[in-house]
Length: 389
Image 1 (cartoon, rainbow, N blue to C red):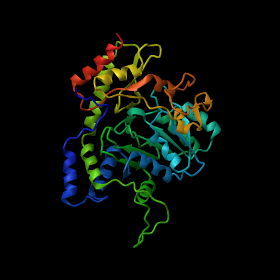
Image 2: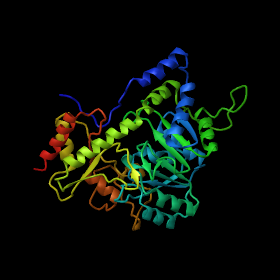
Image 3: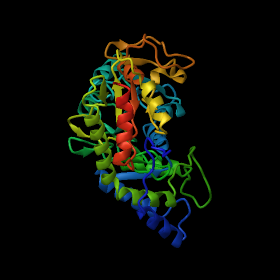
Image 4: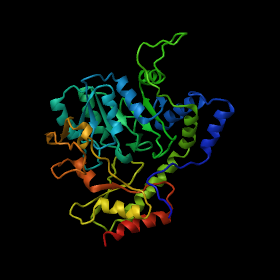
């Protein structure tokens, strides 16, 4: 039985050209012309001035925390409904993450909940916002709040490369933006990431730290602790080839979203993840929620798909429900919520009334692979629809 994937790499052949060039010129060492060119090409695409190609999106967020001098005890506001890589780097620097609930309109950080967090923590070191599943959040509102308080913003656009908000690319609104090229992203380098910024000091510092913070000396001297986070020349070659097809990938992802929207239009219990009308989402993953009063659950749908060798997965489990962050503060529009995160993990209990928790409990990610054929999409949609008859 054919395997239908959630979101697997799509390779075209251009990647091999850049990789072969690296081999032909013996640039297989960590750095080389592909790295520099990939940074320049990404800046040109995204509309930013400076970039640092790195080993992962997580490394980019970690270096963002270092650039913003997050230290022990510093408060950093973070999106709650996201993958843990958004907020884990806060703890790498011994900072204190404080989680902000989602809003219904885009599933991203709620500006009103963010305001409530400032009531307890008026001087956070930074805000890190994620654009969930490729849909831009309420950027204008969040940036206005941040600027009012003088708080730097890190945009986690790991899932939102090529998405736009009011015509500008996600990742270019904050003080620092980050992208991911993990294997399941809209373009991939197998593993890799990039930091972008209008502030050259940030990207220069990121490059310095990511190459083990080696001082300018003839011998190996280090005045601070560094990391081995730089992207390799081979990996960057794959990225250059993938970047040529980014808009093509985006168009296919958007077509997948529309296919699901049309297929489920007559099932009132199903709602797809909302798209920001002020933006143009890349539709990296199409997601859906099921009415809580419906007898069909997301687990039922995922199980039915799995029986046909079709990959799907749950919505991200919010950070405030993760055992590792059980002691962290969490804010909704009602203010600070009681510390009730489960210690051993579960699927979310009824006592959690957060918007992110509700989306998690009643939602799932649908197969959104660029290589899905029309026949594949028909098998997926027919399988889902059969459960609602």
